[in-house]
Length: 186
Image (tube, rainbow, N blue to C red; front, side):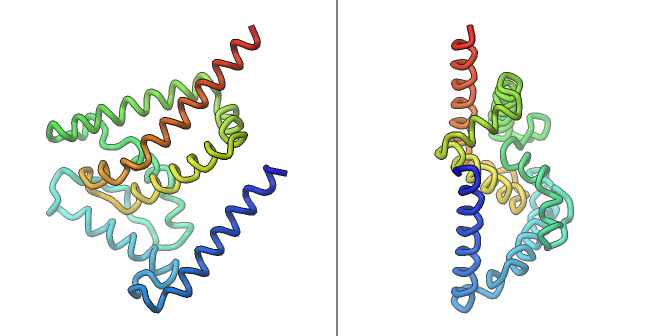
């Protein structure tokens, strides 16, 4: 029952959000009055932030059409950027190097946990626990939009601060569950 209820609840919340967006569009700026305008604004912001004026502290995930399929085509790049960038080799100063080391450490932990738990067990363990499932939805959504709309490394590192503790909680909870399962099998 929980497996069927969760997607339905997420869909209802999504519809509720669209209804709120439609009702408040007269108050909101025209850029935020519809989903299409929001996606177009994200694309314009991304293009603006990749200008040469920002120097080597910016990155580019590439052009995307301001449509849902166009945005979803950038999902892997944007999610990777939102969770793990800047990489060490992209560092131009000490602070970016520290952020790069942080990103590599998180990427290593993520890879280690996926290796130990296997991808199917990772998601099965996460979806068994409603709190972890909520954290995963928040983490993926927030990191995706940060990676999609932010092209400056300094801003992106600050924007993703709310995501990292939740992402690490998901990883460590799955690691703990897997090690407990392995001990019970012995």
